[in-house]
Length: 91
Image 1 (tube, helix red, strand yellow):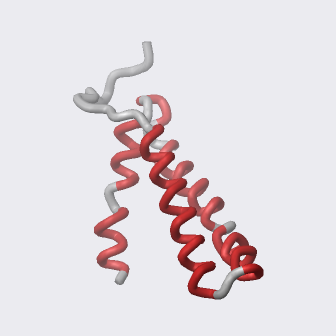
Image 2 (tube, helix red, strand yellow):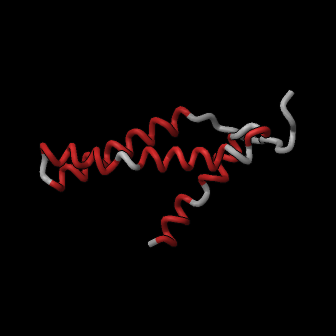
């Protein structure tokens, strides 16, 4: 399973690297990854809250839908950077 997960999400650090300005290109991908890990820690709590009011299947579905919707919103808010020339310093 890790093979498929890495295949699907393995390009994300490279994408974050392309979005990063040169001065923080080495720092930002790792920092963003660790922020994602910190936010993912709340998923268990969120699912438990849903399970207090719903059965397990609905709690899982609602948790997955919440993560999917929030991920879609974040992806839509992010800029697209085509033709970025790496290595140029800040002006």
